[in-house]
Length: 85
Image 1 (cartoon, rainbow, N blue to C red):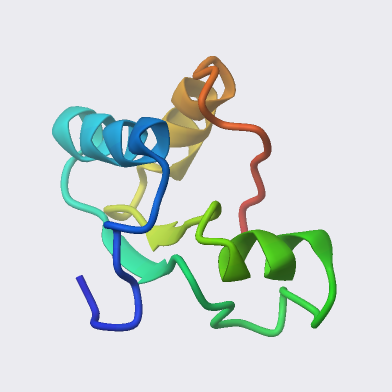
Image 2 (cartoon, helix red, strand yellow; image 1 turned 90 degrees about the vertical axis):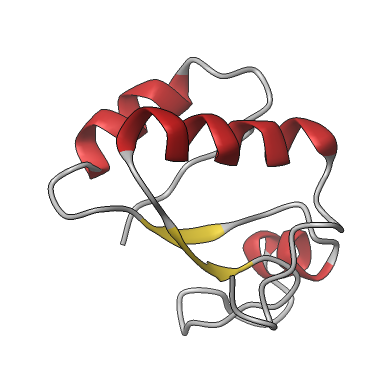
């Protein structure tokens, strides 16, 4: 986990989801938790603010796993929103 993507600040449910995703679909690379790391997060936007509050995660899965992971995350009650880019 990069130093700029800590998980200790995430809500317990979200940490559990990340663990479940890694266990089911293979290792994931965390890109951002408490900071917005891409241009897809405009300052002041909901996504940007969720990152600042450490309530959002950007991650990269193993190649070819994104569709499966998205289907899985859609049924998890701990996940409020999804976006893939």
